[in-house]
Length: 283
Image (cartoon, rainbow, N blue to C red):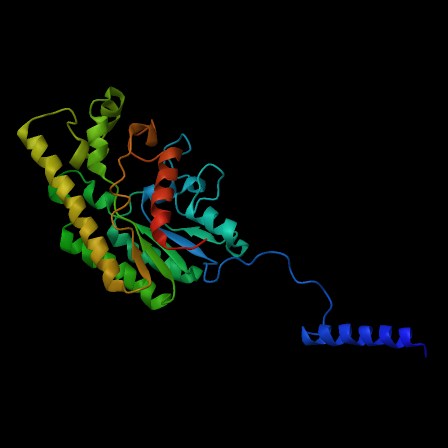
């Protein structure tokens, strides 16, 4: 046999051996980048109307595609869309269990749904409705709020101990009164009964009304302190946003013009930006 034939046969045998070492298949490896390790493949949002995108679709109803957390629409760069861009494994696996009007007492039931989903990333934004009651005396007591938050987080820790949890601070609702009480259109809508513990008699400077707003503001601060403490007690799998969302100095351009209360698309994007930067994902 000519030497060049022998050399060619040796090369063929070497290629076959190499293919066997790599698993016995000569088919090419997938070209898709699997993304950074440890990214979630299923996520869930827990909370109230803010996380449902309420009022962001020009009607006063939930609009989950614009949710800062799980939204899949093109107008909001949600947590889900950012994670999807990094790793396609999460596609179609973002669940939203938040509900308009939900208070902290609803958190445990929502957490049970997230456990059933086998979520490995969960966002929590709760507390606005515990403060927004008919009057300040019916706001959820701080100790009760903490007990209810702890109960919900325990469900997650027991059912999905390896899941990552992000607890987001309550937005500065008092800021809404600050920027809106001189806007006649907002004041007119608020008279219908939106968050009366804060927004009733929005233009009044009477001592009683000023004292009521101050009590409301303090209660939200107290809730935020308990959310931070509850996350710390949860353990290393829980992150708190450090008050980042509460510190946002939003404007009326970031709330919808129907109830002058819930975030519009711009507001949802702002929430997504600020909260995602605290979530700890490395994309």
